[in-house]
Length: 277
Picture 1: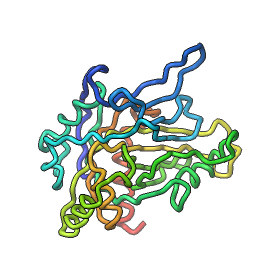
Picture 2: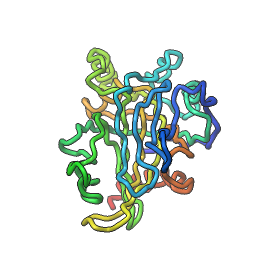
Picture 3: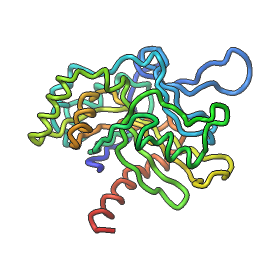
């Protein structure tokens, strides 16, 4: 559910100062570009979908992904419910951590479901295999090396489907159980706290239609900057949580027009459910 959509705005710091960056891995010899990476404090944290757009959609946690990016200055504000993306200077605070660029602030309400790779509900061994098949070398599905949350999916059109994911910077097993319980109790009293993420949209489609379920996969990935305990509490208790998404408009494998459609896709599904369609 989209609560409020902000206007695109320029945020972020120059490359040396930004704590979070999107980069291409450098290859020592010639050839095409290396892996697409999300870096935190100069260390590769996640490998992302490959540049070609025909390879399977991907977020894969790397060994150096070991920290979150929570900010003490806005913790009290995020414990409660934001009414607007711009409330309390939250965008400016987290925007200073990001690489300089254009971002679309979107305030969402989500109901996260925790998924463990290879188990029930796993996108990578389910929907993705139906479209791309197994990895031709390993004979296995893609593996993200992290539990993650699924929140929303919908048909874009006859040839495309949107899948939404919230990806923690560190696995839920690293969370402090007492803090998770505090949020479970808080949510039980009706509070809907707010998490913050930097987000990308990757549009991927196989080059050939050899599988039984060929269509575009729109992968909307929210990388958590703040709110790891909140997401686990919401998934545990079956409660909603707010998510302030800062969608990086130039860092995904999607056209700007595709990014602009995302809020409407959520609104259309909500209207269809309300009318019983």
